[in-house]
Image (cartoon, rainbow, N blue to C red; front, side, top):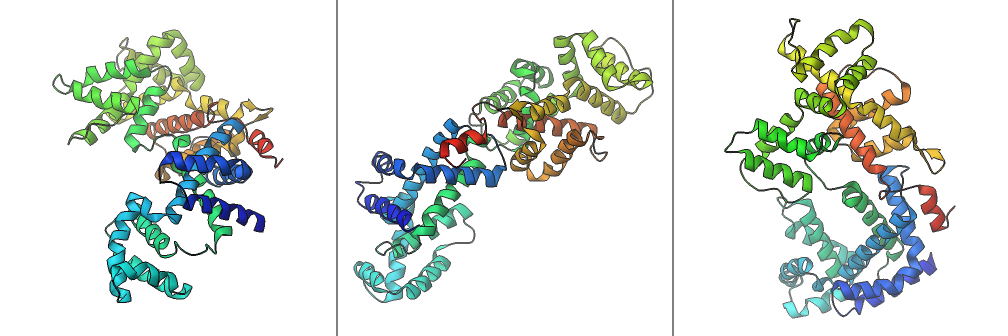
Length: 422
């Protein structure tokens, strides 16, 4: 540890003398120090990923890329702490801090720096706490509050030896790694629930973008079809959504239209053919239990009419159960979980870790319940309505399919081998 602390001190000494806060200058400093501390960064990245995601796939190459990004962020954090006035968001806070300090210390603003450097650690801590209470408005976001705290602490302690280097540097690396895996591109963009649902509905094979656009053209009014298509294309392309009063309503309408069971059944029949769809339904509902689902399949295709008296809700539930049998998201999910990767199956523990990390908090219990049905081969939890179950299955499948992509990565053993810990 003492040797490691000397490394941190050397890095920070270089950061203090950086030409500017320009990313290029910081990158040059990082290039000098990164090879020395590369293993430490990789270890922090792995630790952060495991804490957030559990045992997960990540290739050595991807780990290297993430480690470089985390290291660059770390050098920026060090420079913010060493040279706070160089950063615009910190400089704005310091402009308000100095007049307040002059009033507290009963001196001119030009004398504040000299007086602060002569205070002992206890007085400095008291001054820091008081500054927080004065400069932080409860109405501001937590991100802005953190920026104020960082600026105040960096300014007041800037000319002193960092007594906590042995903990500050590793903790900062760890928190940056965790933040990357919680909010970075590894998990995909942060979207609202309706946008995620639209992506789940469209990206599941064999639906696709063209089918989604055709559904919108059928369901939207002539005067609004263009605005609906604009929102749909923006969600599918990951571009900025148009900010207008109808955005929320349009997203909800799109999710409702694309989830319409009759539309989804017709698409499956168009792609797979009626014979294969009937076989899929018969496999899902054996014996006489398949009579009503087969009727629902033919009604959705327009080749039959309802011959059984069912309420509108019962018909929708029946159609949703047919959709579930045709989409087979449970089987698709199980294939991902049981696929051998690097000589071993990914396994249900991997799947649970991925879903626990990535599912919305309000839906996590349902999603983990569906995964449990794969592990135990038991029935789907009865509390889930057919449409909710389909929505959850699509979300679970999408989550695991994204986590199993080659660019999201092969295997922890490879990364650990590269790190030299195994």
